[in-house]
Each structure stands twice: as C-alpha cells, then as structure tokens.
Amino acid sequence: MRSSLGRAAVVLLLLTTAACTADDTTARPSGSTPAQPETSTSAAPADTSCNPRASLRPSGSLPEPGRMPAGSYMAEIYQRGRLVLGTSQDTLLFSSRNPFTGEIEGFDVDMGRQIAEAIFGDPDKLQIKVVAYDKRVDSAKDGTVDVVADTMTANCTRWNSVDFSSIYYESGQKILVSKDSTIKGVDDLSGKKVCAAKGSTSYDNLGKLTSRPERVALASFGDCLVAFQQNEVDAISTDDTILIGMAAQDPYAKVVGDRYTEEPYGMAISKDHPEFTRFVNAVLQKNRENGTWKATYKKWLGQFGPVPNPPVAQYR
Image (cartoon, rainbow, N blue to C red; front, side, top):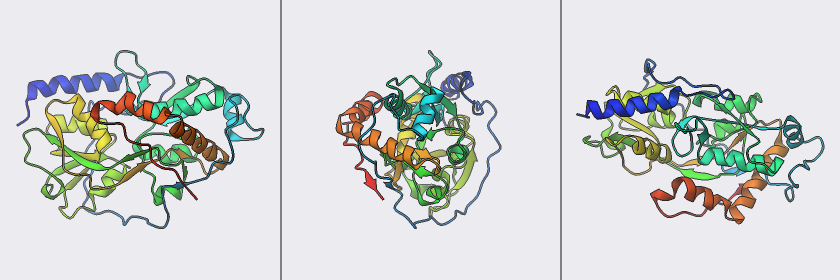
C-alpha cells in the first residue's frame, strides 16, 4: 500500500502547480477533482498508409531573422509580433509550469523558442497557449496556435489532419507503478486500471495489448498522476519521457518494463502553411548540426543518461 501521508504532500504540490495560470495561457483542469474515468477494451487499428517520420523538405537556407519571405506565414507571424505555441503545463521536463516563476518551461518549450529566435532574432517572442491532449490536432489545424510541440507522436491518422515537422525526439511507451507493485511489464496489466490522457496515442496503444488492461481516460497526465496518487488507478502508461518526469515528482513511484511502442515526436502545423513546415524543418536541421539540439537535451534530460544523437531527418 502506498503511503497516504507522503502521497498527500505530493498531490498538494501537484495541485498547487497545476492551479497556477498566466494571462497568455488557457488553463487545463487543475486535477483537484479528477474526472469520471472512461473505460474501454477496444482500439481502432493503426493507420499505416504513410511514413509518419517523413516531413516536407526545407526549401533552401534559412532567411535572416526579421527578413521573412513576403507573403509567407513566417512574415505574418513576424508582423503579429509573436509566435503562438500550443503545449501543456504539466509535463515535467518537456512543458510544465515552474511553481516559483509561473513560467512554462521544458524541452518542448525550447523547441518553440528556437523557432521564435529564427523568425525574430529573439526567443522570447513566444506566446504559450495550454491545450488539452485531445485538442492538439484541432488547435494546429484551425490556427488557434501556429505550432504544437507537446510530446506529440507523429502518425498517419494525424497526418491526415495536420502536417508534422521532421522528428525531433524519439520516445516509447512504458508503465509507471508504485514502488511496492508486482507489475513488471505489459504482461502483468490484466484486470488492472491503467490511466492515460484522453486523445493520446498512449490511450490507443493500451487498447492493443493482449493483456487487456482496463483503460482509464482522464483529461491530462497530470490528472492521471493525481488519480494514481489517490489509489484510483493501478498504473499510468505513456511515453517514458513523461513517466520519468512523474517519477521525479513522486518518490513512491517507479517506471517499469521495456518500451513497447515507438513514439516519434513531431511538431504539428496547419496544412494551410507548408512553407512554415519547411521553415521549421530548416530550423531543426540547423540545430541538429550546430549542437543546439544536444545542448537542449543536456539541459532538460542530461541527468538521466548520456546525450544521444538527434533523430535523423526524413523527408517526403
């Protein structure tokens, strides 16, 4: 049994962090009253009609900051005076709100800052909008945000609605359980309540497991962590990068098992602006070559092991 006193303190810290909001963001549910779980045991077959890792090839070298091509979406962003990034506020190390400064920060946020720097010459020309997991595609598609960077797996189903940048991070799904749990991997999940964010590929992947866990969908992984800490679910399953951040918040939790999926992260962009996707890919390529990607990885994730090489870009 998990320690209730210790977990209460962790829950309080999480709720305090999630409750903080800023004027330039749209807050997610705080998690103080977890939503009623949605359970299911089936999942739609994966769309394998494309190579989801292959994006639009950059068209030449990057323009100088402040000199965006006339008529391009980058020029429109420059005239507006800010790049609008869609992301989360509760994914520690990738995009979470710093409880001391109130700012949202992390690996994904720095991806957005690097795009802003390429457009304006100033990484601070960035407005963050917090979007729910199940609204990430729609937010990019309808132009609510310019780009979504939010531990988002590029897959063929999503490619039908939005374009993706080249892959900027490689992840894979694992399981988070309490330190006294007997669960060691996906084969031990039969009959267990396992939480994932509604609208995430993690939730879909749980439905494909032969062990047939009882899937529980909540609004965000922050809500999943609260439900886990309150003993409402047995485990959380999502990308190992997200789980590492959860385990860092909760001394009573551990990440177990091998990766059982491949989750290539791409940034989602409206199909109305292919020139912007090509521009973003040029920024990513430059940062792979000049060491910026490795420096960003070391800054946020270097404590968990050696810095890997960045993913190799693939183009259509």
